[in-house]
Image 1: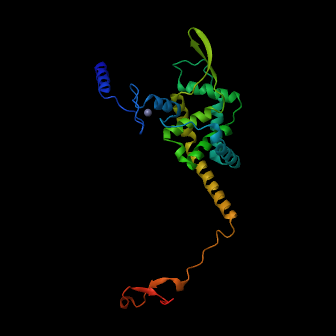
Image 2 (image 1 turned 45 degrees about the vertical axis):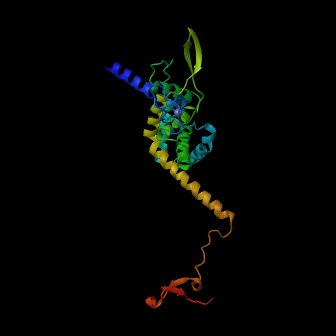
Image 3 (image 1 turned 120 degrees about the vertical axis):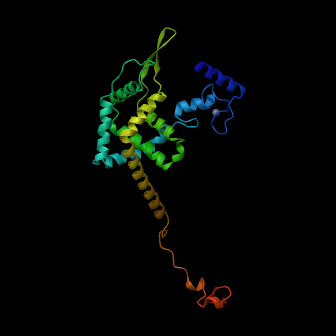
Length: 261
Ligand SMILES: [Zn+2]
């Protein structure tokens, strides 16, 4: 039955090949997917067919703002709990040894976190990265094409605090060392964990930082021009139209108080 369904679908596709789902893209879809080859690859890499990778350099100023805020708020109970949670995650990460095709996303994440722990990455760096990304989204939401795109970038930027670990791969009977790639399932696994534990706090922190930045921006404008915040004068009564006190006697219902200037 399933085989017949598959054949019918192939026949149908052959009769009317369908276009990629991305608006404005007229390329044909992959055999089974929703997108053409190009958009499928971008979707795989970023979490959205039209997404782009948020680079470390782009995130840096936002992460720096977050670091400043975390240091200022080190006595906040939520911030303390978040840092402790991350510390535990780093300290308890287990290297599963060699990775295989069948390795679980949690094992793959474990390998990276183990490397981060050895490299001396701190809980504060991880939290700054998370809050920095939330801050970027608050200030410039168009950087993210969808929530999924955001989740993927969150996982990638956290893991990329260290260079990719090497993995052993076999190619024509020969062992080779390759960089480990961050797969889709791994990103989703890590983003889910980070958001469940830190999401609400990170959002609140990002919004508070944004509020301060807007206030700083306002202050900067005020400082730029003397008197820009002075209240404006009330309008001169003599210059204003107003309803005629006599009402119906006047055809128009209003007149200039001093009609002949
Ligand atoms: Zn396409």
